[in-house]
Image (cartoon, rainbow, N blue to C red):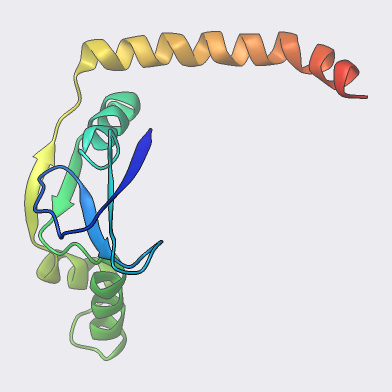
Length: 127
């Protein structure tokens, strides 16, 4: 869930995205907050997939991927794997909570079974 609010002055907030000047209204600062902005979505993802996630120091992954591809293409490295190993620097490893992962797997099974049962009924209702 994301929450948006506006301010007359530029706020200095942790756990919020922005502030963005004049994004919706002139002379107002837009602030975006909520669970996604606070970083909890990454924890949910790691727990759901049940595998570690390696965060890079570089936050713009488009630029990072471009540098890897270009350097490999220009022959500075033997290929993408070597270029990636040499260029990418990791800042953090997020490890899953395996108990939560087991819960997500169980919920996924329930979701799939419910979808299978409800799809024909919902199609019939919508026609």
